[in-house]
Amino acid sequence: MTLTFTDAIGTQHQADPDARIVSLVPSITELLCDLGLAPQLVGRTGFCIHPAELVRDIPKVGGTKDVNIEKIRALAPTHLVVNIDENEEETADLLAEFVPNIIVTHPLGPQDNLALARLLGGVFGRDEAAARWCAEFEAEYAALQASPKGPPQTMLYVIWQDPWMTISPDTYIARMLAEIGWQVPSLGDVRYPQFRWSPELVNGIDGVLLSSEPYRFTEAHVHALEQQIGKPVLLVDGEMLSWYGSRALAGLKYLRQLARE
Image (cartoon, rainbow, N blue to C red; front, side, top):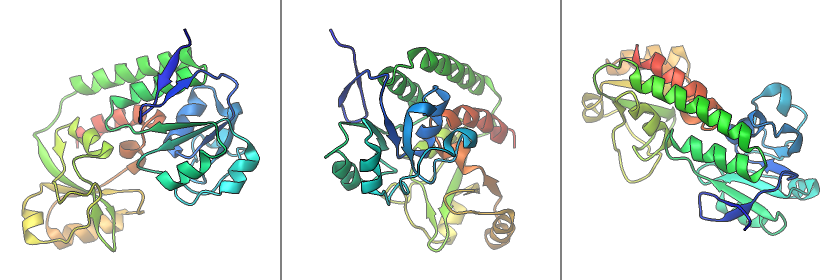
């Protein structure tokens, strides 16, 4: 019986250790490299910047949303790795016309990184490397669970300005923050809602987290916003809280640091 591995939409994939891979997900590109698959990565987005020494020679195929279809066609990949949140379904459908295998990912919380690593390790013949990575992740997760944490807080996590935008509780970032008892307010039915700085909003939160990405908030923004709303504002590393895969390992350590602040 042929062993298969199931992706986020239920598609079954067979192992192919000789795959030619294009990754359209920056965080997953990093994980693929950490699993020893950099030599098989034939394409990446311009946002796939980690690990720099390994990805610099991998051809770029556009961004996560504005993909160069013809450039990918010329690279002749056997496998394409995409993510439900980061890539457009229409783009994936176009690429599926000539890429034989589309691996769809959709981690919703920190523990989903284990299944992600096992999926990629299984499909691309790096089971042992994936098992080692998972063991390291589980050890870091256990350390986070055992670490001291402060009282529960409601924190507004801000990802954009003009217009102001935040995240909903139904996001990977929110579930990362929940590991240290920080909840995000629900501001509607969309996952990344716009908002205004109303008195009701400010009164309902304990503080604000300004993410370093995708908007490049700085300490100057922190100071100005603290003066405006009169609540604590903290600049946080967006990669540590929103990137799954390899960066999530460092993200667990980062959460322990945040819990002490």
